[in-house]
Image (cartoon, rainbow, N blue to C red; front, side):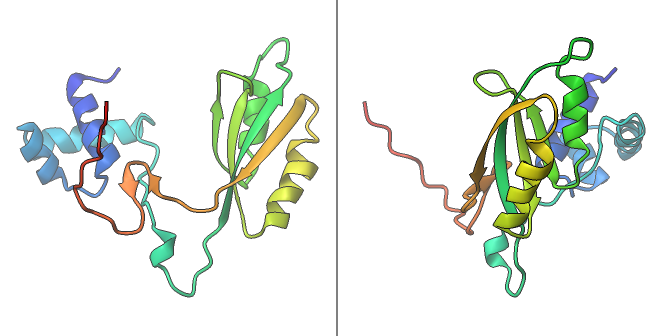
Length: 166
């Protein structure tokens, strides 16, 4: 069970995972020991699974960024496990980086990475679409990132407000 303090710590870490315990303690007006214990508990009980870095690949030279695709998947749920069993089979593929259950016309959104278009196509046709309960797939390749997890890509840090017209 997470406390109000835990939720406040998680809000801070979800936006700034590299903040020190002292910085978080100062923001929340708590002692560093209390914050450190709470973070350790959240890591130990599996609430915090990992810390991530958002990379703007356009700033890198001599490194080819992996190709990413969004795949909408329609499945036939299984009688006893519903979506969970097929979801876990899909999630275990190494190409899959994110996997969500959706409402609407498709059941899952699967985000995959590969080195080439062909690698992703082979994954979709040879592994994903061939699973027994998969009824259909639609693949969308990501051409360019403009924003990821709230971070703008391309270095535009201006605080210009968007124009709103009636």
